[in-house]
Image (spheres, rainbow, N blue to C red):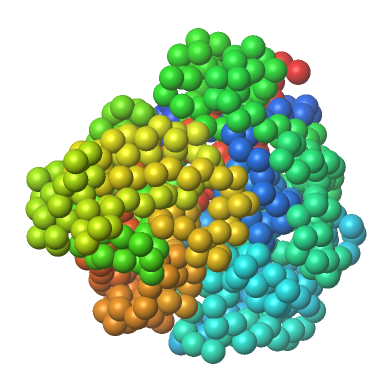
Length: 542
C-alpha cells in the first residue's frame, strides 16, 4: 500500500484527480469583504438568504446547493479537496493508504475528535455511517452517497482510530468522494435514526457549527461549536469558527433577497442574478462567483417513453439550442455556455463544443430524415404522434425558469414542443426515482469526472432509464477501475462522447454560484465543489 502522511500531499496518481482550476472569480479575490478590513473579528450572527428551501438537514441526503450550504457546516469529512489545485488534504483522517487495485482504503483518524454530543469519533463511527448509507438510507434517500459507495463490501475496524473500507471491485473515485458532505461522518445517535428523522434538524456532527433550529421549507439556524480543534487543513485558520451563528432564511424572490441585502437586513444571499448586481454594488457589497464542476445544467431524456425514445429526436435537440443566447439574454459574463457533458473545470473534462454548435438547419434535417414533418401549427408529427415532451425541473437556481422559457422558444423554431413542468425539489427527487418524467432539467456538482457514472451509468442513477450501451458502459467501468490518470481521462472522454452521440444529455449552461455579500461580510469562501464554507467567515461593524 502507498502511505500518504499528514505532512505530504496525497499522490494525484492514487486519486486520479487533477487540478480544479478557476474555482473562484470575483473582484480578483477568493473571499468577500475589502482587503483593508483588518484582522478577523470573532462574533456576530450571519444572516443568509437562501433562494430555495433546504430539502433535508442530513448531509448524507443532501442534493441541492441551497441544502448543502446549510448541511456542510455541521459535518466534517474524512478528507477535504483544495479548491486551488484539486489535491486531497487531511480533515478527520490525518493520513490514509490506498491499495494498488483501488479496492481497499485505510484511514487513520485524528485523535481527540468529538461529535457535538461529546461522544468520540472512532473507526466504528466511520463503519456505521457507511453501513447506514448502503443500508437504511439506500439510493432512494441518499442517491449521491449511495453511488459513491457502489460495490461497498464493508468497513473493518482495525483499531479505535483506523478504519479499512473495502469494495468488491476497484473504486478509484472513492477517495475524492470522502471529501463530499454526503459522506461526512455523523454521531451514532444520528446514524441510528430513521431516514425521515435524520431530516428534522437533529443531526449531530463534528463540524464547526451545530443545529439550533430547523423549520422545514422556511429556515435553519446554526450556532458555533466551541472547542473545535480538528478543522480541515484547507481552512484559513485553526480553531473555532469566527461567527457565533448563522441564520438561514428562505426568500424565493430574487428582488426581495437583493433588497434585503442592500438595506442591511441580510449579510449574504444566494443566486444574485445579473439584474441584482447594480443594487448590491451600489450599497457597497459585491457578488462572488464560482463555476460549479460536474454535470452542467441540461436536459436528460427518459429514453424509455414518448418521443424521446427516438434517438434522432434526442440528437436533433443538440444543435437546436443557442447556448450563447441563453447566457447573453438571461445571465451575464459570469456564466458560460456548456461545451460538453462536464463543466469545463471538472477533472477529466472533454471539449465537445463542436457537437453543440447552434445550427437549426441541421436540427431540422435530422428530424426531416427521421420522418418528423411540420404540422399546421409548426410542431412536427410522425405517424400521428406530436413531437412534444415535458421537462421536469425545480427552481433550485433562480434562472431556471427564464432559461427554459428561452429553450422552449428555440425548440419551437425547429418544430419541437417543450412543456415546462416545475415542481418542488423534494417532488422532483421522488419522480426522478420512479422514472415519472419525459426529461429532467438539472445540474449536479462534483469535482471529479466520476459524476458521469453516478448520473448516466447502468449501475448508477441511470436517469435516462436506458438499456446497455457497450461502449459507454465499458468506459464508465474503466474510469472507476483505474488510478492511472491518462487512462482514466481517456475512458472519461469516451464516455462523454458516447453520451452525446446517443443523445443522453442536452447541455445548456455551466452553473456559477453567484453570492451577494455585504461590505461588512468577509471571507465567504467556496470549497472545491463551489459550495460555501463559513468556518473562516467573519463580520465587521457589529
